[in-house]
Image 1 (cartoon, rainbow, N blue to C red):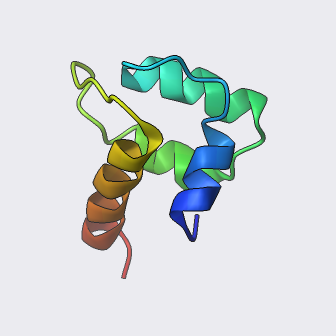
Image 2 (image 1 turned 60 degrees about the horizontal axis):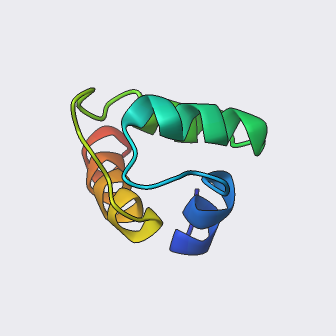
Length: 68
């Protein structure tokens, strides 16, 4: 996962607002890489996201915490 465009591609077809499980289903359908699923798995299960930009921001924060 390199850019917000990648996130938007992996989450194509998501109806917002969306919870992490919705994001995981879309990512599976869109062939997202394993690191994307690892990061999605770190999102709080009760979180709601209102657009792919919001998801990208949260994943970037998580990526900074878990990757060297």
